[in-house]
Image (cartoon, rainbow, N blue to C red; front, side, top):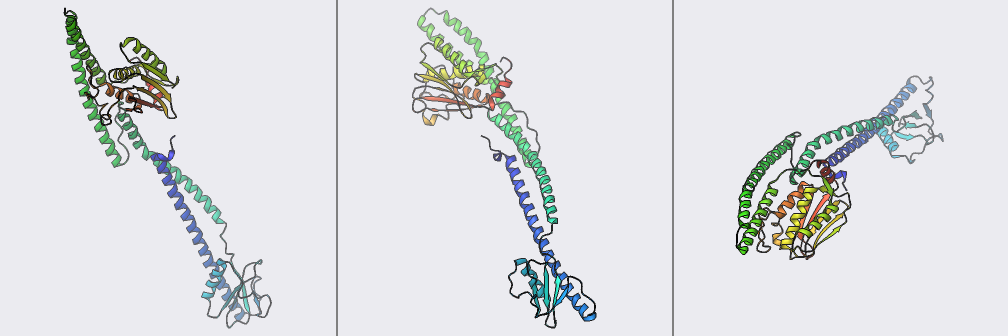
Length: 438
């Protein structure tokens, strides 16, 4: 199952959202701290100003009444708050700041809790306590609006960042898809060169590589097809002349050699063919049953072929591709393996599988890598006549063109097994492009 976080877009989006969230949280915390400190400084300045104003008022116009929230209290009054009362940390810092701004020996206290906040100040020369109101030391309600603005800015920033991440990963996604198609042997169109400079350089290099590989493959295919096509006519004449020989033993030997050469030429033509298979998709289980039945009837001396078909009707592959895969693998098992040969299909959580296995001696571990390389024959370990070393290479190419993956190896010590896997995602594409006969 795909995980969104595994993609470049998912990781870029997560990174951007995380950075924006961290920066906005730090910004909000800084605003709160700065506003709190600013409010404390303002409250201290206001309290000191009021205390000085009351002191000047008493000294210059003692007969004038004081404002309603300002008063003078006798030191002996029971209303004077105690000196060692427990205060919250912000209020304690406020009192310390006021005391630092006053002359030495000044007593600074706060009013009792549960009443409007008041500051009690008495210098050494004051005969009474001066009581003035103070600003409440709490965060103003305007921060609620700040949070709303931060949420709006964060939302727009996330949307813009996600769009930027999507635009940045699009060229890389196109390149990744092209690399996947190229790795499967499918035709690849030039990838648009866009994005950052390094990505444009990478795309340009990939396009050049695809062109060079395509040119080399085309030259090799033309050479193989030309040689194989030119050999078909002389081989046909040679077979005709062999049929006219009087000596039966010599005639049969020449005919077998001509048939072997003809088979090699046909393998050359199949390997050189580089076109897409546009034959009608067929149910793999049903087609496997038909091919195995025909193989039993036509191939004389063929080993026992059994079927274990459990993929179901939704497993579809182009008919020509499937026929060539099965014919090559059955011929390979007939030539090198031992009975029984098992053709099996299955449905897995990721897709479908098709396998052909025999019960022979298998392939030596050091030769498995070379088994599917073109023109590589594992003789004398698996010797034979009339073989070009293209059978497994053709199968690999056909499987990859159909959007599948393959694995070759010895199966539980019972012989060679070729396991082909086709994901659910690739099968609809195969069916969609298979509209005309090949």
